[in-house]
Amino acid sequence: MDIMIVLYNLLVLFGLSRSADGETQNSHGVILQRLKTLESKVSEQEKLISEQHEIILHQSERITALELSNRKGPFENIKDERLQEGPVVSKRFVLENEGPVAFTAAIKPLLIAHVKHMETIKFETVITSIGGGYDNQTGVFVAPVSGIYVFSCSLLDHMGPEVGVPNSAMLHAEIVHNQRVLGRIFAHATVTYRDQGAQTLFAQVSQGDQVWVRTIDNHDLGLGGELYSTFSGYLLQAV
Image (cartoon, rainbow, N blue to C red):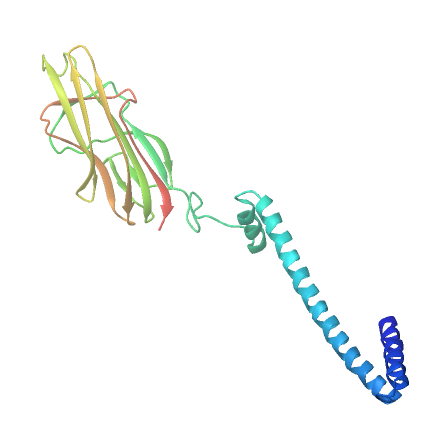
């Protein structure tokens, strides 16, 4: 090592100069011992410098990784995790071991006359029936699968000379689940104009439960048809 040679020469000169003055006679062994001591200290300093260099390198790598992470979009990390974990299968709208359940039925004739209080409305014309459950003879939907359903009903309040009421009529109806009222429908027709009311709601229904639509507070109602009055249901998610 060059620095050691320089130190050796300096120590030799220092020793010789002191010997020339007659103060102390240093042997080469003492000089070598001093050199070893200095060499040990230099080695310790080099080791410390190497350790500090490793720490700096590690911190630099972390800073670089953080900078790259900040450049990513807000959803990129989520995307990477999903790719590592494999495809994510959602049960919403995709039912496992069960087929879809959906129905829509309507009243097709011009008028259903003389509808009474607490009478179940029979939507006789089936437009869509997937998975079964709706009976157009009774107007009742029986759930084939337990789950969260969407139910929707639209009713047309008919008014005309065939009803026999000269002034007006008000339609009140309910969507019922096992005798529990889920929601109500209202429409108010006059001699001149018809009126239509609608309701859409979500309900958790168990297999075998019944859902239907019934009129209330009416004793001689004229219910409009021509596909204006409909009843629909859809299995949103099996549970």
